[in-house]
Image 1 (spheres, rainbow, N blue to C red):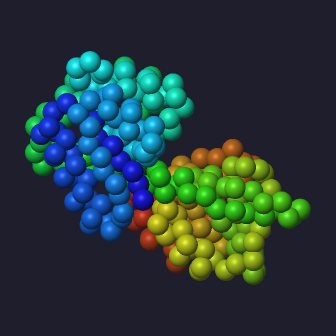
Image 2 (cartoon, one colour):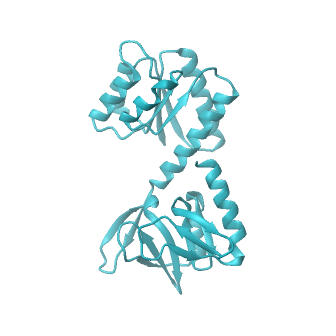
Image 3 (cartoon, one colour):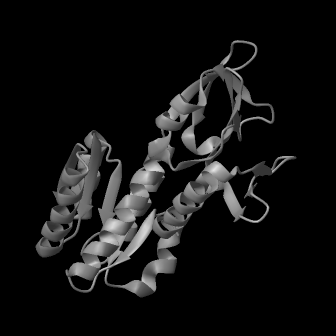
Length: 247
């Protein structure tokens, strides 16, 4: 379950943001716990027990501003995703000091605000999924914890799958088939580009349709992978959709 906090001294803002989040996560069939706070102090006190995963935080609040709250959270090594929601768009650059996940401007609680909110939440969900972990074993039988985001691509080699990751130059290898791995990573924005390759789209630099290859944005000796005719149309469509939803 994802634990979410909303902090705003405006009761209308609290209710609107909570409603948008409840509708979204109900549609996604995802279990969440949403808590509302009218002051920064009450949020901080509750966070000591709840440890919220995501915090929607207004900046302009009396007694303790959103920046004050964010500073206290970061000083206590809080790793929550902070999303500033404020009508003061000129403060966006100041907010960067607190490592927010995003900044949402609020003027009126209309359809535009709702779509902006949903866009940020969708990006957040993808980001959180990429923080999921798997366990891979190396050739010495030593187990390694690998984040999904650290996987560059998967390569099939007969009855084995090679995991190319940012953790080391040599790949991890497991006994598995590519079809099962493709299904496993379907929710993590991976694209099948060849019968031998499944790529994490966050590392695609460009797709060359004429050369039928993928150029990867990775620090490796061979940052290009072949793309077969069978998969190139679907791979291109998936990548375009990925770019549209994750600018």
